[in-house]
Image (cartoon, rainbow, N blue to C red; front, side, top):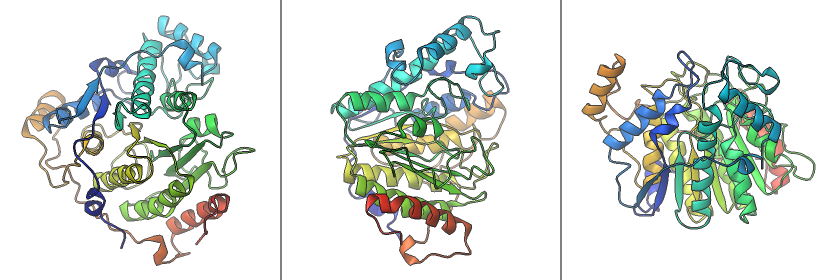
Amino acid sequence: MAASSQELLMSMSSDTPVQIAWDEAMTAYDFGRGHPMSPIRLELTTRLAERLGILTRPGVQVVEPRQASDSELATVHEPAYIDAVRAASQDPDQVNLHRGLGTSDVPTFADMHEVSARVVGATVDTSLAVWHGQAVRAANIAGGLHHAMPGLASGFCVYNDIAVAIRALLDAGARRIAYVDVDVHHGDGVQYTFADDPRVLTISLHETPLTLFPGTGYSDDTGGAGAEGSAVNVALPPGTRDAGWLRAFHAVVPPLLRAFAPEILVTQQGCDTHVNDPLANLALTVDGQRESYVALRGLADELCSGRWVAVGGGGYEIIEVVPRAWSHLLATVAGEPIEPSREVPEEWREYVSRRYGRPAPGRMTDGGDVEYRDWDDGFDPAEAVDRAIKATRQAIFPAHGLDIG
C-alpha cells in the first residue's frame, strides 16, 4: 500500500509564508446567468475558507490581484487577439467567432478584457513571488484558464493565466518548470504553448478525449521536435474513481517529476473530476481530490524546496463540491490540511441555504475510500485504468530514462 496522506504530512511545516490571491473583483469573470462557470463558486469557496480560518492563519498573505499589462499578455497571446478581446469588452453585443468570442462557451461581457487580465496578473504575481522567495507557496483559485490559445478563446477561458505565468518564470531565469494539470479536461492550451520547450514539463491527467472536450490529450501526444517527452498525457476512462485515479497519478507523476527535477511546481486543480460534476464523467470524491493536493505539496517539498503555485480551473457543482474541494486546496497551500471529518461551519451552511435555497454539505468529506494499489503491485491488462497508465508510461518513460514497468 502506498504512503498515506498523514505520512506525507510529517514533513510539512505549518508556518511557511504563503500568498493567496483574492479580491471580490475576481467574481466579475462572469459569463452570465445559466453559464456553468458561475462566479458563485469563487464567492462560496472564499467564504468557506474564511469561516474555516484558512485565510487568517499566521504567515498567510491575501494579496489583491492587479491587471496584467498588454505586454505581459502578449508573451503568450497574439496582439490581434488581445485587441479583439478588448473590443468585445467595450461592445459585448459583437461576436468574433474567428477568435472564439461570443460563443456559448465564451459569451462576451462588459469589461471582459480587464477582469481576464486581472486573473492573469494574480497568477503571474504569485508565481514570481514564489520564484523570488517572497513566498514559498501560492494559490489563485480564480485562475487555471488552461484552454485559452494564443489567438483563440476556448472552453470558458479568455486569457491563459497559467501560460503567461510560466513564461514570466522562464523570463525570470527558471530553467525547469513542471506543470501538473488534474482538471477533468486536457490542459491543451498550456501544453500547446510549451510543446517545443524542453524547459517545461506538462503533465495532464484527464478524461479520455474520446468522450470529452477538447478532444485532445492522447498518450502518444508527447511534445514537439527537440522537446520529446515534455508533454505527458494520461487519458482515463469514464467512471474512474478515487482508487484508479490515485493509482494513475502515483504511477506517472512522482517518477517523472523526480527524473525532471523541477525548480518550481505549477499545478492546475480543476475539481470537475468529481462524481457529481455535471459536465464530465469521472467519479472522484473530495477525499480523492484532497489526496492529490497533499501529494503535490509533498512533491514540491521534496523536489522544489517547497515552491508550489496552485491555481483553480474547472468545477461546476458549485455548492456541494467546489467550495469544499478548494478549501482543502487552500488549507494545504496555507500550511496544515483540513481533516476530512471536520464539520462544515454552521454559519456557512445557513448562508448557502438562505442565499441559494439549497442544502449544504455537513462535513468536509464525502466518505470516499482513498486507498489504491501501487503500480509496483502489478499491471492488470483487464483494467481500463491500467491500460491507460501503461500507454502513458510506454510513450513517455523512455525519454526520461525510466523503466516502463
